[in-house]
Length: 154
Image (cartoon, rainbow, N blue to C red; front, side):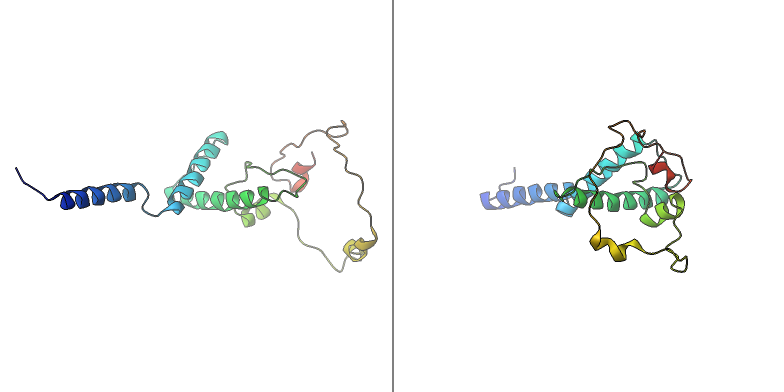
């Protein structure tokens, strides 16, 4: 058979090991992180029964989902918040798409003659916190489709 020096054998084995490892994760941590988002997106699509018509649409929705997931992670890291956040059926939309499709807000009309309360907000005191759902005054949030922001209050 062929005789090789131990140093050559060790170098070949080391190179093969490194090559095998790099084929698993060529781009380092970013690759692992991307797969986390892809896995979360896959689970989210199943939970929300989402199917996209083309690979391009799927890629666009994955990009929007990843951006929203990153915002979600950043928000969750703020321990001073008094509310919770999570993924919902809008997680594959860009902010612009969500605003265009689900809100009826057209902006503040400064000519409406209504005083802007923020000017005097420094004199206001915060009202006591009340969970109106817990005390039975209102029902939990329901989705009313594209009627504007009323789905948040129904």
